[in-house]
Length: 79
Image (cartoon, rainbow, N blue to C red; front, side):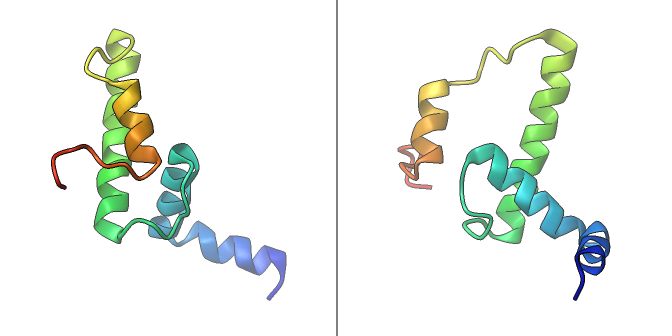
């Protein structure tokens, strides 16, 4: 498979592209999340960016909680 063929295949695989975008944003392996978790994280990322573009920074964002979750520490709620 050539590089062009690989890129063409990825252009048509929206889930794989979303998985990598979410993984890069979170600094995790792209295979740590299920399809549902990938879609849910991607939707939250898009909603956060939209809200941020409309109203500035998200006041509900907790950077410490984000870092704990990004490092696999969870949210403390047993989820």
